Amino acid sequence: MKRSSVVEVLQSDKFLQEVMIKGWVRTFRSNRFIALNDGSTIHNIQCVVDFENTKEELLKRITTGAAVSIKGTLTESQGKGQSVEIKVTDLEVLGDSNPDEYPIQPKKHSLEFLRENAHLRIRTNTFSAIMRVRSRLSFAVHKYFQENGFNYVNTPIVTGSDAEGAGEMFGVSVFEKNKAPLNEDGTIDYSQDFFGKETNLTVSGQLEAETYAMALGKVYTFGPTFRAENSNTTRHLAEFWMIEPEVAFNDLDANMDLSEDFIKAVLTDVLENCTEDLAFLDQRLTQEEKSKPQAQRSDMSLLEKLHFVVENNFKRVSYTEAFDILRNCKPNKKKKFQFPIHQWGVDLQSEHERFLVEKHFKCPVILFDYPATIKAFYMRLNEDGKTVRAMDVLFPGIGEIVGGSQREERLEVLQEKMAALDIDEKELWWYLDTRRFGTAVHSGFGLGFERLVQFATGMGNIRDVIPFPRSPQNAEF
Ligand code: 4AD
Ligand code: MG
Image (cartoon, rainbow, N blue to C red):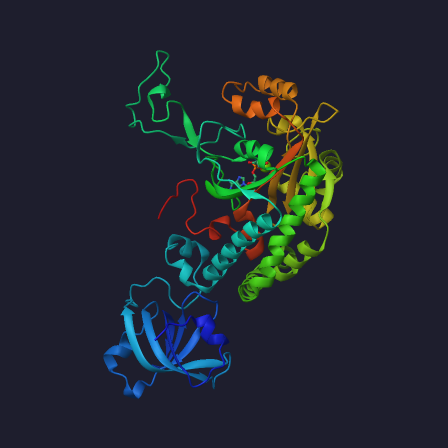
C-alpha cells in the first residue's frame, strides 16, 4: 500500500478509503486517540485506536516521540478541531521512544531548553513551522531571481580576500597547532600551507560576484557566510546565509528599487504559500506579547506586520537627514541613547536604527549616502568627496536587514581608496581588472537570510531560525 502524507490525508474527502501513514506520535490520550505528525503540515491527524482489540503491550509502546506506521479507514471526524480522522486497523511501532527519557514532552518548553536540544526541537510545532517557512523563503529567493533574469553564482567559501575589510575572519589552515613553520620575523609562513597563502572562510561573496556581473549582467549568490565577530546578540551568527545580487549598469536608485521589490516578493510568496504555519506563528507571537508589559507590546500582529511591509513603500532617507532627526530627537536630548548622536559621521548603532524605523518613520527605511569613513572601500564616492553611495535597509524589530552600495567603478578612485586604507593591490589584482577592462556602473547588496526568516516568523532570537546555530562558545551538533 502506498504511503500518504498527513497533509494529503487531511485534505482528502475520500471517506471509507484505506490509507497508510507513517509519522511520530505527538500525544496519546485515553489509550485511544493518537495525534500523529509527519512534518508535512503543522496539523496532526487524529488516529483512533480500537483499544479493546489491541494488545496491552502494543498500547504501552505508543508514546510521545515514537515512530509508527498506521493503516486505517478515513472517516469524518466526530470530535471538534478536525474534519477527518483515521480508524486504525493496523498499527506498527517502528521506533520506540522511552517517555521517561524523551526530552520533548507535550507541554510548553522554553526556547533556551529547545536550543540545547536543537536535534529534537524540530519535532515541535514552533520549529517545524519556522523551518517550513525558511525552506519556502529559500525557494522564493531563487524563484524571484530566476524569473527576473538573474544567474545563480557559487562564489568560493575558502578565500584569500577580506571583502568587508573588517578582519573578522576564521582562518583555514592545515598546519598543526603550534607547529606552523615561521618566517624569520616570527610570523607564520603560509607559503608552506595548503593553498600557499593565508586563507579564510568568506565574509561575503561580493567581490567575486562583481566579476560575474561584469559579464553575465545580473547575478546573485546564496550561500554560507562566516564572521568571527564576538557579538553575542539576538541578530548575529558566526555562520549565516547571505543572498547577494549584483547588477551591471544599476545605479544606487535601481539598487534600492531591487532590494525593495525583492523583499516584498519573497514575503508575499510566504504569505501565499505558508498560510497555516504563519497563522500558527502569529498566534504564538500574540501569546508571547501578552506576557510582556503593555508598553513593550507590539501594536501589530505578525501577519499585520508582514502585510504592512508588503503593502507600503519603504521610506528612503539620506544619512545626513537621519542624522539631523536623531540629533534633535527626544531620546538623544534626554541622553537616553547609550551612544549619543552629536558629530556628523558617527556610525549608527542599532538603538538609532530602531528609533528611526519603529518610533519615527514607523515603516521600513532605506538609509543611503553614508559617510565614507564608516563604510567599506569598494563603495562609490559621491561628488561631495565625503559620502559614498551606500544603502542599508532597516526593518522593525530587526534593524539592518540589507547592506549594499553602488560600487566604485573608477580605477584611479578605487586605487586611491585602497592605498589610503592600506589594502594591497597585489591581493586584489583581479578585482581591479574589472575596472581596467570594460568598467561600468554597477550595484548590489547583501541580505542576511536569517534576519529575513526572523522577520517572517516573528522570532526574537536569530538562533531559533537556523537549524544548528553557530555563535561564540557554541558549535554543538
Ligand atoms: O552589511 P554587510 O556586512 O554587507 C556585505 O557583506 C556586503 N558585501 C553585501 C553586498 O553589498 N553584497 O552584510 C550584509 C547583511 C547584513 O545587512 C545582515 O543582514 C547580514 O548580512 N549579516 C549578518 N547576519 C547574521 N549574522 C551576522 N553576523 C551578520 N553579519 C551581517
Ligand atoms: Mg552592513
